[in-house]
Length: 169
Image (cartoon, rainbow, N blue to C red):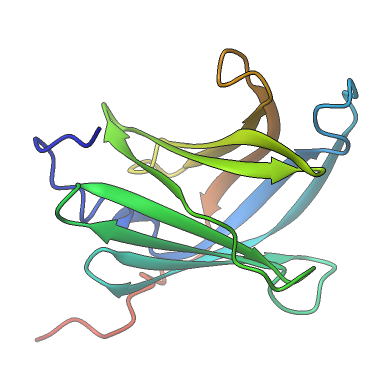
């Protein structure tokens, strides 16, 4: 259920620009493995319009972006839809939908992992700080328990504001 108390159209604005990213992801999610793979790269956030942001993920060893996320805001529901696509298969998955409360954003979707239907959750926190934090988790028991599968910690990489259009004078 959406909250009509907060117009979150600008919730992601502080991410606009270029960030250094440290990513840690579980090698074998929901398989009883605790093996993690870590990498460094760049996350570039571009404001498209009020209530829309594009994120490109680049890793140091990759040639160009390896994934993208599109954030779109629905002013009627006061919720965000977060779409993910990977260059592995070029497909855009169903959006995680949610909103921010008390400085933390939670976004959910019913999706599939390894051919099984499960819940997926994104959590964004510390957005207005110099070190925003992202987590992705999966649940195979209807959300009673969650397994953390990806963590991204950001640090500002430049003074770039990420705006698609220069500010008006």
